[in-house]
Image (tube, rainbow, N blue to C red; front, side, top):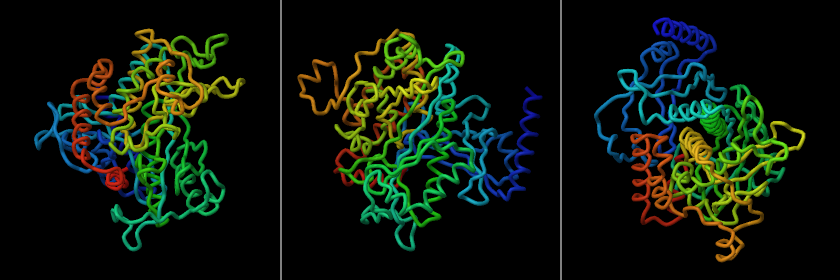
Length: 465
């Protein structure tokens, strides 16, 4: 143990020296709270070794912060007492291309005795990844990131702007090349910054809503995928600021318009072989892959409280908007909550699945960990996938949906939180402390917006993510 600690100290010192030589003066250590907000402590680059050895102090009360910075409480967390230590993941330290003089690292949280904090979402994601590995499964995950870009208020780029009309810097049609032409310098800088930071961009394109774009990045292991999406968002935010723009990742930027999703893609492997390419198997899915996806599908009502954690999320989740509001799955069906993507027949790694309901208000570590837990429970309980659905369930009558076994996913955060509260598999996977903290934040968000109109909810949360 002492030898490993000495190696880490030496590694941190060498890394700090390299950062200083690159002109880095400060390192941002981030974690994501249960409301989906990336919180931060920063240290001077020369203090990185000390941070890696002893951690950086922060209060456990942040686990019960809400999206508007109010503080609630759970049975285990809340109030002014206690302290935790943030430890940067040295393997993920990244010099930030759009913030000269800065680097970034995700952090794990421990108590003062060096024990893992039971509500640390990043360690939850790692535990679930290790649980999958113990079952002989390798998961590769990746996120699609959608955002809306507007011009910042003149002379005050950090203004809330909740009551101001949004000033879109591009006016071209949905998915149109016009938007790329109008913002070509900005989009070039986004992709360049991500590339310099080691993020492999698969594609970038305009989306449906005014000023909306999407970037898709390469998959990795679940914890890395969650780290990557945090870095992607903050990079887009930083590039936007340098161009006099603002980026919103909120689920609903304007009530009544198409919102921002953050779809989670996943694929399963065993011994390096894709479980989505099994010859002669139904839908080409190996039995474990089918059961894993069946577990996700069965858990979706509870998973919504993880992946759609804000009242604003439910402004986005509307039928016939490609958001996946019905508990069903389909092969290449973009209206299904769980979409199976077949890929090219000659691509051994081409098949994967997509959870379409999630948005960027979600803590990505909670999202990947909870999906892993649901899928593994599906394997343990030999869950079967029902028949896939074709077409848009939203255009079917109530009786036809009932005949096909298609039900509406929770339409409110209250309903989703109720389902999470009753989910034994997710409670077991998350543990009492983390599960209770998540529920406390969800209940507080419900109460805060209980009397708010849709427009007010969208305006209040527009710049929180």
